Structures are given as structure tokens and as C-alpha cells.
Amino acid sequence: MTTAALGIAVSTLPGLPAGTDTIGVVAQMVRRAASRDFETWWNKAENAGFCANPIRLTGTDSFGRELRVWTRCNNRRAVACPSCSDLYARDTWQLVHAGVHGGHHDLPPTVAEHPQVFVTLTAPSFGAVHTTRDDGQRGQARRCHDRGRNAHQRCQHGRPLWCSSIHHEGDAHVGQPLCEDCYDYMGHVLFAWHAPELWRRFTIALRRLLRRRLRALGESPTAARINFVKVTEMQRRAIPHFHAVIRLDEPPQPGQAPTPPKSSITATDLALLIHQAASGVALTVAAPAHGAEISSRVIQFGTQTDARPLRSDSSDCGGATPRQSRRSVPAYLAKYVTKSVADFGVGVRRMSPLAVPDLDVPTHIRAILTTILDLADHGAYSEIDRWLHTLGFRGHITTKSRLFSTTMSALREHRAEWTREQRHRSDLATDEHDRALHGAEEEVEWTFDRAGLGNLGERTLVVSAAHRMIEHRHIVRANRWTHDQSSPPDWST
Image 1 (spheres, helix red, strand yellow):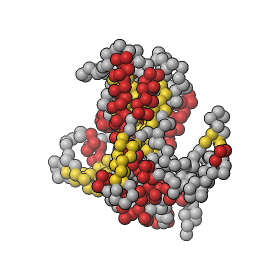
Image 2 (tube, one colour):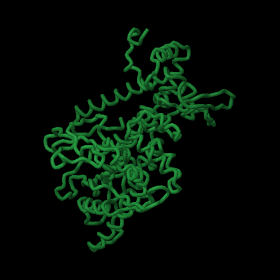
Image 3 (cartoon, rainbow, N blue to C red):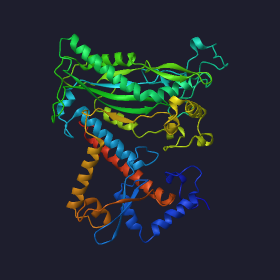
Image 4 (cartoon, one colour):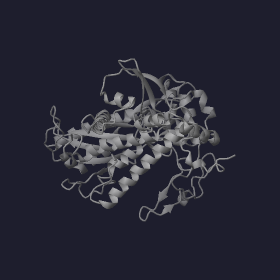
């Protein structure tokens, strides 16, 4: 008997590894749905937001009764947990929106009048790769690499330096080198490893340039302060690059909200300073040479730095056209925080170097992993193999300066408080999970029991419910946007 005979399509069973016995999974789903405690089990899953990998906690109340609750895993990766990933993206939207527009989370609406710039910093080229292209006007697709002057040229390995194919999004060739032997994998891995330090030096250089510019204008060098939020995205060639919103504020006063800087520097001036800082910052690092020799190498950002002022009604952008409207920036950044290297076939958790030969990954990804293992043999990079699962990137996906906006912890505390109030008003705190979360009766000391669900059938039920919940929320948000064009879709809903 097949799933088709049962009237169930494989596509309706989300979250299953490739090659899973779907008949067995369906049987597990039926057993769970027919069990006596299904309603209790389902309530626990719903209270945990249909988390695919819930953390199970146990505790004992003053009467000696054993209590069990589930809580979210809070994994930002969509491939690991769709529900928690969606929640993380919505929290990121709240964080960025508050810093860009103000008006909520203890940030005044006046922050929208501060000079703001949307920045993209990319890695340099380490070799020609297949890519998607358009004509830049009508959006018509173009060939990957036109022959042109390279019509008769080949690399030193005899491979052509052109590609006549038209690649589209989702094409497996996009991001793959034209010649893997010519591609500089050592430079690729070194950039990924040192990218967080390169960003730190960029922010230092930008602050110094800002103070220098203020002095040149005859203003106090402390008249303006830089605050930012940054999100890291993996490009199709499997290397990180940064998206950020950089904002100018007046130096803060203790306990006060951000105020506009008392300076004549505009968003356009800030964009020029960002270009100057990005092109000038460099990092000299140790790089293995032939054999056991160690040489030095300079790591820099690529030349495709994009810094566009975000225009507001009263701000001067000097006629510059913003890359993104100020409304779309929070959603643009929130979209990238849920991505992971799982799209390249690499797991989301730390893995042993012994697992690399058995991975089903493209040749390009395997070459990156092999280069990481080669680097781990050198003293300066002895711990780099701990980041095999992130392809050598050891930084945080989302970072921000302290005063740009609220924090993830504050957002979670606010949501928990709101949930407690809503459940208290509706008098739903009747089962052990609600009593534990509300603290309506007593404080319980919780201990870790285990993580995850019982089997793949339970996971499929929970992940399916999470997808339905997310789809419903998107439909509601789209309908709100359709009926009220005066306000942007709210990622918090």
C-alpha cells in the first residue's frame, strides 16, 4: 500500500527527511490522533506555538504533584522550526521597525526624522560564478556571462570564461564557480572567518570619519552618534555579506530616548562616509602558503558597496534614490534572519569533521568544507572546524548597537506579559501548563526533561499546524494591506 492508496500526498507531510517511510509516519499520526490523551497533547503543542522541537520541562508543586510543560526552542532557522523561525522574523521586524520609524517600544516617532542609510557590504570576488542578470531597465533576464571580449578566452585549466545560459532564481548552477580550480577557496574561507572583525573595524572607521567630518564643518565632534542594526545573509556563492541600517542620533542622555543630532550632516553625507569607510578598512591576517609556511593576506570588503539614504518627508537626501523605501526595510531585513546554510545541504548544528565526506552537497560546498578542514591544521585557525555547520562564519546573524532599538529579550518579555494578561482575563488558566506560565498559584522550579517530539508522526502533525497558522497570518496581513493602502503590512501580526 502506498500513500496514494491512503489518499495522502507526500507533499502534505512537511518536515520529513528525504527517504522517510511515509506509510510509517502516517501510522504514527493516526495512533497519536486516536490516543486518549490527544487533546492534552495537542493543547501542549498549541501552547508552545506548534514548535517543532519543544523543550519539555518538569516540576513539582507544593502538593507533590508532577507538572509538565512545553516551551519553544526559539530556533531562528526555518528548516529547523517553522513556527519559531516565523516568530523570530516578526520580532526582528519589531526591532528594526522601532529603530527606523519609532512610535513604539519606548522609541519616539522623531527617530524617523534622523539621518538614516540602508547599507549592503559584500565580499570581494574570489572567482567568476554563475549568476542571475537582467538588463536593469525592464527586468528582462540576460545571459549569465556574455561572450563579448571573452569569446575566445579560457582559463589556465582550459575552461571557458563565459556562460551563455540564462539562470533564474532557484537554479542549482547559481553561485557555482565557472572554474572550481581557479576559484580562490582559501580567500573565501578567510573572509568568512574574519568578516565579524572586518565589520567591527568598519564601524570604528566610520565613527572616526564622522568626527573628522564634524570638525571640518566647525561643529563639535560629539554632536552626532552612530547607531545601527545589522543582519547577515549568505549569498548564493555561500559567503556572508551584511545588510544594515545606520542612523545618526544625538549623544544620549541617561534614561532619555534618542533625539535628532544637532548637526548639519545629512543622510547623503552619511552615505558618502560609509562608502569611504568600507573602501578603506582592511585586515591583515595569517594565511597558509605552500606546505607549513604561513604568509600574510589582506581581507577587505568588495567594491559593490551599496549605501542609500532612507528618505523621510523632512530629511534631505540630496535627490538620492533609496534602494528600499523606509517602510519595506524592516520586512527586508526580517526576511533574511531565518535563512541558514541548510539551503546548501549542510546541517544546522555542529558536526564532526568525519561527517564531511558523507554529506550530499554540491562540489563548491564540499571544497569550502575541505578548505576549512585544511585551515584547522594550522595553529592560528585550530578552532575553525567548530564552524563547519556555518561554512566558517563565526559571527551573529543579527547584531545592533545598544541604543538603536529595543532588544529581543524585551520583546519576549512584553509578549509573555501580554499573553498572561489575555489568558487571565479569559480565565483559561485551568490546566497545568497555564498555571505554570501564569504563576497564578505558586512558583515552580522547573528542570529540563528532554527536547523534541516523540516521533516523526507527531512532528508532522505539529509542523503542519504551524504552516497553517503562518499561512493564515499571511492571508490576514495581505487582506489588511489590500483594504488599507495607507499603512504597511505589519509583520508583528
